[in-house]
Amino acid sequence: MNRPAEFEAPTASVRGLLEKLGEGRLSVRDRLAIPPQEMPAQDPAARRGNMDEVALGYSEEQARLEALRCLQCKNAPCIASCPVGIDIPGFIAEIAAGRYAESLAVLKKSNLFPAICGRVCPQEVQCQATCTVGKSLKSLDKAVSIGRLERFAADRERESGRLEVPAVKPATGKRVAVVGSGPAGLAAAADLAKEGHAVTIFEAFHKPGGVMIYGIPEFRLPKDIVGREIEALEQMGVEIRTNFLVGRTRSLKDLLDRDGFAAVFIGSGAGLPKFMDIPGENLIGVFSANEYLTRSNLMRAYDLQHADTPIFKAKRMAVLGGGNVAMDAARTAVRMGAEKVFLVYRRTEREMPARVEEVAHAREEGVVFRFLESPTRILGDERKRVTGMECLSYTLGDPDASGRRSPVAVPGSEHLLDVDAVIVAIGNESHPLLLQTNPEIAVSRRGNIITDETGKTSMDRVYAGGDIVLGAATVILAMGEGRRAAASINRLLAEE
Ligand code: FAD
Ligand code: SF4
Ligand code: SF4
Picture 1: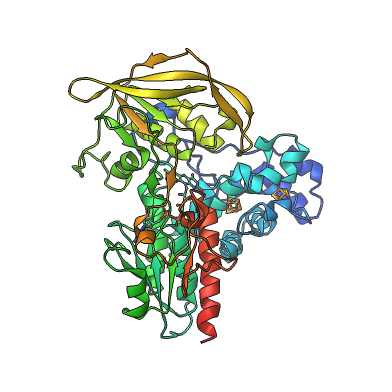
Picture 2: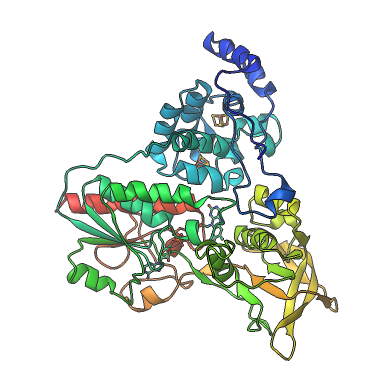
């Protein structure tokens, strides 16, 4: 591991800057002259063979230097670009001053899970996109690394071994059910429990955490971080019932009418994978990214010594898509021993929705990007095993509804890609089961639950948030939605 040693005392360069800061002499010029701090990372060759976290976190000196880059803007445009409105200059100023517990307290006022968001938030299109430093230096890459600093503050507490359990008000005697234990459900449960309500989370899988556990791999988000947040919730009195599929084990109506819950929050996510709908998708060796990642993450297929979960061992794998899910699947395939992993995307790198850092890491790990290409069919042998994929080449046309230039197929450009496995990572939608069994809940054409501005659905006492409402979105947006709905439920129950 090449993480720099922790600093007990600031080095001369940091000390000089801190002295200037203390005397009110640290100018904008001084701050802009501090170089952006790079994130230490595991060596690419070594990490191809392990599941350990790739980004290693700032040292104390790096964190303080990076924090001193923040101009402490009065209007702070970064705050409005954070979906949960964190007081960003506030928490960064505490890091610059070496007051890490205070920094975390500022963060936790708006974000219950900073160790998670600091790692997986698409910061470059959220808080960091509007940072004045990035604008002044005319490069988005030089914006203050808000996410990395958020992670630093949260990790300090984690490394200390303390588990911060939020205070809970006296019991109200009212019960609230939460369906799903992803970021939306966990955030809602925390805010409901703080108010003194008895909260039960119902989770279909055998482990709580949603996509943070079954989708995002260990090398990006170590599972013990999510586990700690769940442990804190349990210490607040939240009950978690796993292997419980609402819609089958119990209907929403049962929860409200028979089981005595006063309200329900649905955070069931968008876990149903989409497929290409091309010939050959049912061959052996074709998987959804969800299945592949769930086998690896949730059922630990990579841990050959302790788990006997089967996982397809590909030699040459194509991953279809250009988002975070595609990147996670491709990088997992590298770690599972595939000799060649192609990421096939029908637009160019510019239009790829994946986080810039994940694309860079995938490339360093040897993933081969094939842009402006898309499959027309998957080919198989007599045993129904994948033997290759036929693709068409594309060019870019006019922008489509998403604002990105649309891919246009080049006629007659068919060619073969030699692969023995294909992972489809072109998006997810909501699972119809819960909604089919509760037709009173209004849904959009795409199958997402329709809510009002308070997070309430068309069914009395039932609220929803996260991917089930937004479509596949982000961890922080899901958390924000969970908190908004919890606030509405808390108001509803307070009035009764
Ligand atoms: P989920 O996290 O999907 O959780 C829903 C939970 O509900 C699941 O555990 C599910 O088992 C459970 N459930 C569903 N139906 C029922 C039922 N009927 N009864 C009981 N339980 C049920 N976002 C980012 O911000 N950054 C990233 O880097 C990033 N990477 C991603 C990588 C992958 C591989 C994937 C799939 C997504 C990624 N996302 C990322 C998106 C992000 O994870 C989601 O937007 C977020 O998890 C949505 O949260 P949620 O709580 O709405 O749903
Ligand atoms: Fe930025 Fe996400 Fe943190 Fe908000 S929660 S400050 S968007 S990293
Ligand atoms: Fe600091 Fe950038 Fe926010 Fe200004 S916009 S307060 S420089 S993080």
